[in-house]
Amino acid sequence: MLADFVMTLAPGRGRQLGKFENGVVSVIAIATSVFFILLAFGVYVQSQIALNWFIGAILAVAFLTTTGNPKRPTGRTVFSWTAAIVSVAIAVYFTVMQPIYDERLPMIDGLNPIDQIAGVILIVLVLEATRRCIGMTLVLVVMVFLAYGIFGHLLTGPFWHRELSLEEMLYQIVYTTNGLFGPALAVAALLVFAFVAFGTLLDAAGGGDFFFDLANSLVGRQAGGPAKVAVVSSGLYGSISGSPTSDVVTTGSFTIPLMIRTGLTPTYAGAVEATASTGGALLPPVMGTAAFLMSDFTGIPYSSIAIAAVVPALLYYLSVFLAVHLRARVDNLQPSASADTPSVLTVLRHSWYYLIPIFILVWYVLTVDRPAFSAALAMASLVPILLVRVRNPSAAGKALVRALDDSTRRMTGIGVACAVAGLVVGTLAMTDLTGKISSALFLLAHGNALLTLIIATVIVIILGMGMPTPAVYALASVLAAPALLALNIPLLPAHLFIVYFASMSAITPPVAVAAFAAATIANANPMAIGLQCCRLAIVAFIIPYVFIYNPGVLLIGSVADVVLSIVTATIAIVALVCAQEGYLGRPLGVTTRLLLVALGLALMAAQAAFAILA
Image 1 (cartoon, rainbow, N blue to C red):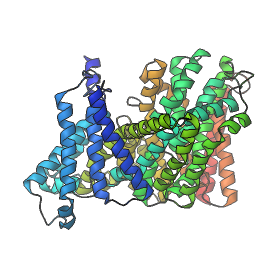
Image 2 (image 1 turned 180 degrees about the horizontal axis):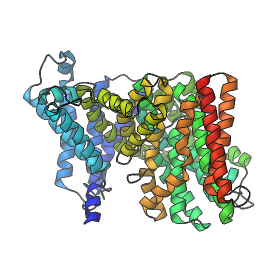
Image 3 (image 1 turned 135 degrees about the vertical axis):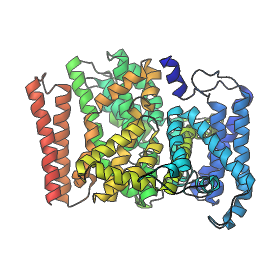
């Protein structure tokens, strides 16, 4: 009974598409990819029309490629086709009506009956697509917020709000940029899409192989080489793809079987890959969807966010790499690379051209601060690389078309998550629930900064147990960020704190997308992998607190403050990881491990006190 109930909450699985169905999906996906890549290059289309296209295409692809739940048949169904056709029809209707909507006076001109019906249908379609792509848990969360918007006027006390009519709710949620078509969906369509397409094309051009070979040449000859290769290659590839799931599927197909063959358990191998891949969403230059949302929500240039995120991301990988290294020493694991494994210089000499698109991406992100255009230019530089690798124009063309197809399919989950997050954000704005929850958090913590941070962490982690990263950040940024800002925590650290924990939702059970992806390759229990991920990354969960109290870790402050903060944080991380793994040149006893924990925490507390006093 319990297993059946859990299955009903789980997302659906991929359909076995026939030739006709796959052709329809490919036409929609390829056309959508071309359209949004052209937008990234600077072709002008009214943003609302672009979002209409995006939501119609994403919903149609979601219905045609994903079943209702894991137990549903994977063949063609009438409902899925009907839902896909209606999704496209709604998008076309909104596009045709857009000139009229542009002239409408907000909250003065009402909605006609057809507009109201179209709005309700779109909300239902988004919720159904969410159930399929993400799971029923998120749908239930969203329905709670929508119910609050409808019935909140019946409450008493601080959570009461004025009565809202159905027409008013539909207007705010669907027909303004405060709800479904708000910043989250706009960032997904107009910014994240370009980076997902770049990562997909990089993969098609052999970028995954390049990063694996480079990592193998760097650390493959060391003890526990396969696990270290997984950490390094996943970090390198993930910093470009920005997607933990994509990272696991790409690099994990090499690293997980290799780790298992050299003595690691399937659960631990999957956890290493999932944990390392999740860090890619925190590592510049691309980072993940949440970082782009942060830039749009806060108005902070993406280049500033990327620069500030460098050291925390490197500390994350230091903690994971060191944990893997110490585990290899304890278990006496062998290297993966042989004596004839190419050196780093050899790998770079044969595949140096993969650095060109990465250089273009980093340069334009940091100097021009036009991330989507940067990704588009990097994509353009990948086309000749694809030709060099394939050495056959026809085959290269087919690979390019497949990459365009895959890009939209990979965007489906992100797009649905951002759309459904918009429903909640719109409801929060109408009812002022954001301010009420923030005030409640502040009162609950009695104004204590550390306690407020802990409560915010708990909120983000709880949200992360049922939502993907974009939705987690979109909600947490309006629920928890105001309470952090009320403590005079600067805007960048406060939101980066939320981005960090939102990204960690990829390895936080019970809905840990990176762990589930790794479980498929490792043939292990995804829940066990998720729990092992949390253990492996336990020290990494402290890093956001480090940069809140030590802004030097975010490269904020004088050179002396920055250096002192980084050195202190590094020593503290090393001490805590050694205590966690129980090894420092030799196995450690309980007393020594406790002393190392005390040392790590004392260093962090001392540096925090110094920063506060300064």
